[in-house]
Image 1 (cartoon, rainbow, N blue to C red):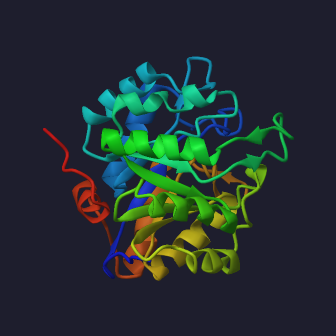
Image 2: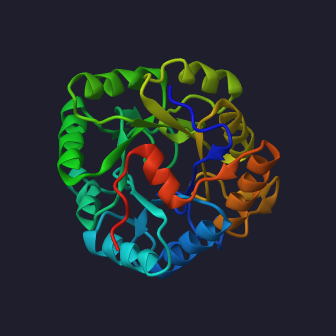
Amino acid sequence: MLKLPANKVIITVATTGAITRKAQNPNLPEQPDEIAQTAYECYNEGAAICHIHARDPQGTPTGSREVFQEIHDKIRARCDIVLNYTTGGGPNLSLEERIECLKAGPEIASLNMGTMMRISGPYEGVPWCNSRKDIETWAIKMKEMGIKPEMEVYSHAMFREVENLIEKGLVEKPYYVNLVLGMMYQGAVPATPKYLNSLLDFIPADAYVNVCAIGSAQAPLTTLGMISGTCVRVGMEDNIYYAKGELVKSNAQLVARTVRIARELGKEPCTPEEARQILGLKPLQD
């Protein structure tokens, strides 16, 4: 595993997600203007990367190139935060719809490392299919388009697909792995220090790691990740509370807390350009 410089941390903010609704927290950003504004606020607080899901006007997840392009343009009019688009999309989207967002030109895109079974909610019992063939096809497409895959790992078994992409040369160094803990809806391992440490044991030598934990585990596990030399992800996609019973006011509030903790650990948040250099992304064109 590659560790970040001891005095630095890369913070990703996941602003929206596919599952959370305004009915759960009215502060959730859904529409392009809302997402662009929250991205800018998080950039000002110290986030280097913004992980983006899009919604249609009714608030339903969409993979529409046009909607992602609108978000892209509105964020770029405000700041140079690194843009990371989801190819997970949402349970209502087809495989083709999920990768439509790549045409809007993200710098990073999520790439899920295996098939999972949804075990609760309205899609209980419906598999989330990510076959090896599809994973390889998407990795090839991202490589051709100059997009870095963020390899999403929800359990130890998914490292088989990480290793497969590396062995076949379908991803380029430095690799980038996002560990998702506590997403029980999709069968992820529990969000505990024991599981995080065990997952870190399987990280390839030439890979940076991002730690993402759901709900109340977000702050403790991202703190542990920073101590371990990883990047971290916070935001309302993964957690709609600031404290027990207290809804978070904004994504920026979660980023600000992470920056405070980082500074107590002697770390400064990377700027977007520093994050690009570390992760092997191209400099942002003017």
